[in-house]
Amino acid sequence: MELTAFLNYLEHERRYSKHTITAYKRDLTQFITYLKAQYELEEWAKLKSLHLRSWVVSLMQRELSATSIHRKVSSLKTYHKFLLITQGISKMSFPQVLLPKKSERLPAFVEKGQLNKLQTKVVFPDGFSGMRDYLILEILYSTGMRRSEVIGLRWADVDFENHHCRIKGKGNKVRLVPFGKPLKETLLAYQTLLEETFSENEAGLILLTDKGQPMYPKFVYNKVKHYLSLITTSKKKSPHVLRHSFATHLANNGADLNAIKELLGHASLAATEVYTHNSIEQLKKVYEQAHPKAKK
Image 1 (tube, helix red, strand yellow):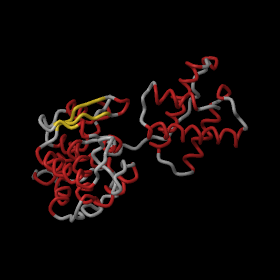
Image 2 (image 1 turned 45 degrees about the horizontal axis):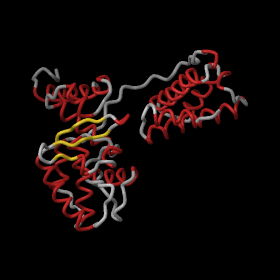
Image 3 (image 1 turned 30 degrees about the vertical axis):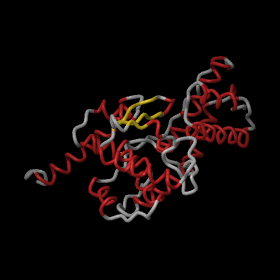
Image 4 (image 1 turned 60 degrees about the vertical axis):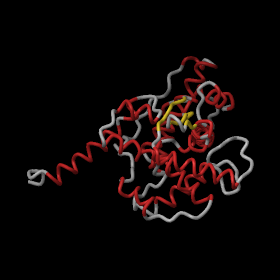
């Protein structure tokens, strides 16, 4: 089963990110390998519910989460639709299979008081690397950007006069996100230090490694994990946790859900509604702590 045409379709027509395309390729390759090993099956048109059900069971035996299994099956469905369009495959329907139920998991986030410790308690290294590290955290939390968006951010995307930045998100969709005076001041101070440290930056990227090269996903992840480990005991300490914190704090302070959706670059309001759950949890805590009938 050839995947090249499908992966090109995802990149050029659907305009998916490299990270997303890699996930699709991994999911499909795993499934195709399983079909060959277990059933000696190499034709997608011969795919049956039996084959898909067997694979799902094998994933459950490996203790993959329900969310991961749903995502993998979704990858197969997208590939199936592509084959229907490009190859016909007899207009066969995608095999039906019962999937494990996904638990309702609230997005992990860091409390505002803990994030304030990044300014008051955490000591960053002197020089370029320390200011760069602090800026990574500041941008992620102040704008709600995705990791890939932070990596690709350029000076040309920042409008200092109007206090907003132009972000190219999933599917190359562009959105404008405002930022406040603290981030502006940090950016300007960092810009001066960056120019003093590296004489060449042809791509105009804002954030570079210690060697003046473009950042990469693992670099950003390791930096965020390190600094968050200094201020929180939460199990999750990824760049996406700061994005969740950005959205959760907006929701808890009464921001309109549609506005949060636009700031995050979500295609659907359904993806943003999860932050209302965190807001409700916050209200429950206030009620339990303050209302005389709460614990009776």
